[in-house]
Image (cartoon, helix red, strand yellow):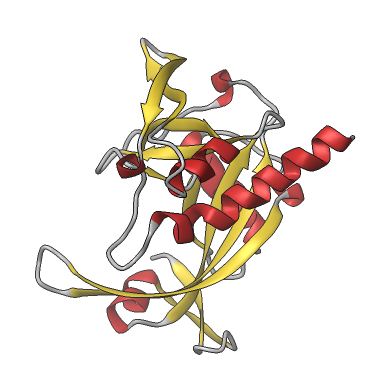
Length: 211
């Protein structure tokens, strides 16, 4: 059993409940969306194992009595195997999320969450990653500014790297990413979904250049 803290729609704490019941009954809870970026202005998207599309570096539920930053560090480590300095992660936004999805068995998956979006500087090398292959095929590393331009329709693709494990070693393969490579749910658009994260990282890079 995985317990989550639950809330009312205004984020007033109500107690704890089992994760399965949370999604069965559509109870409000909190999640964390984790992003890594580097000093060169690159952002790291995970390559999802289910669809092969690009999404957050890592993401997941915040467990009962767990802090947001603790959840950030745990999710990064569980999904991509990297122990980050999560206490220095910066808040980008808190997004109120509501979605109902019909599962294969016909039941309704009810998602009512406040998604806490945070980003943290990555200063290691690709050998530090150890991917959970059940969830993550690897990482897509792209320049944040060029990716923003892609989403704004100013370019057709952005050249970056696919970081994957091959023969028990992480390798970086040059790849041209297009808009359709990025995960966007029904009713969303790619610029709204990822734009604020990209702008945050671009701004961080501008600060580094001034230093």
